[in-house]
Image (cartoon, rainbow, N blue to C red; front, side, top):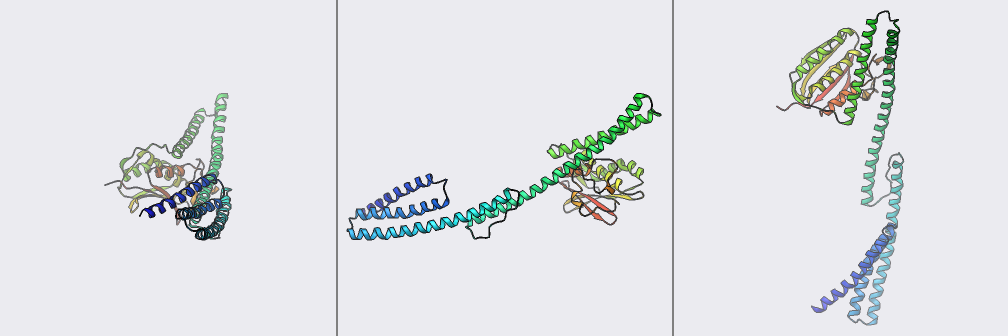
Length: 370
């Protein structure tokens, strides 16, 4: 028993010394190639076995012949193990370099394409993660380009929409100041109209900035959609009469929802104004509300003739106005962007689709708890 303990002790001591030396070597080589690290790991295993074997052989006072045999066998095993580790390390390093070259492509704005050569499970997993990251970066770049385009269009349209009323205000104010206005009261009424238009535009910009910043304050309360839509129809009726458009709201269920009444009234008002302006005279704008498996669906259907398929994804973008034929005489294209922002702040969604003769805007809101 004592001999066994001593053999184990000598073997452990020899292997431990080798292991400590290997750990020191790995620390010194931690910034070097993976091949060097794999070679050190293989060398530690072989040399530890060699050191333990020799320590036991010397302690057992083997004959010189037996000691030479043991040493030769272990040395040959060490040479083969080190050569195998070197070849394996070079193979792994080659795969990692190919992966690094592939990863550099999407870092420069391209798409990542994993190397076709076989690789270890870890490198294969890394390739999948890099591919997923590349896809996310590509989607992010696409969104960024779309947002930048939208911002440029918004700045251009806002500049145009501000220039026209400001020029009119300047001309009318100069006419009043010089006393050459034929009808001062009419000029004053026109100035007030233009000021209210500018005030509405600034209000829309402020609302949109709060939505984008995530600071839109909401005060949800339990409200009946029937009452909410009724108030919105009453508010839009003068504009509908002016454009010769008929408003219909007969298919509205008295469904309760928990929303901010002020903000949701703005959503309905924007949708109705958008629909009325794009519906020709003698056309109809219909509002409906009903329960659905997803919650509560509020829809506004107009007679605009439809939206081109390529424009449908952009309808709720900031500043979007569509083709020149659909461009309204006023407004900066912020109404539908505000609609989407407010609806999403209520954990809902806003969509649009074409129907025969027009299009249908739908707002899906979570149903109020019973």
